Length: 89
Image (cartoon, rainbow, N blue to C red; front, side, top):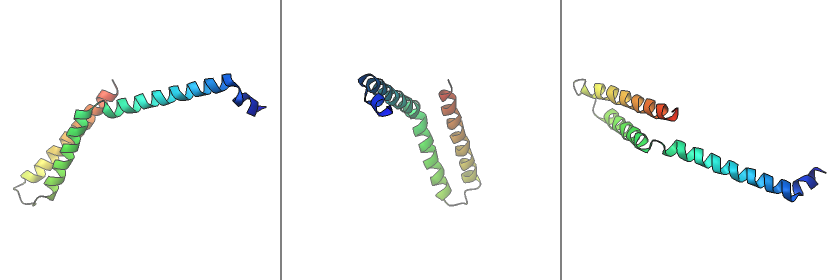
């Protein structure tokens, strides 16, 4: 009997419509989440690359290299906070 219900044109239409709507909504939400902050995301990527370069640099820079790494870490945290803030609005 359950097999006959799924074969019903009305039930199939409703299921297909629901599936299409679900795919559209999920696609919209994923696209919005990933594209909502493209400049902030790229800025974070650049900061992470800068941190990698600073960490790979020679250690003896009179403390400036270590301070620069700390400041870049702070900047990354601020970018993350900004991205999260924008998501919750």
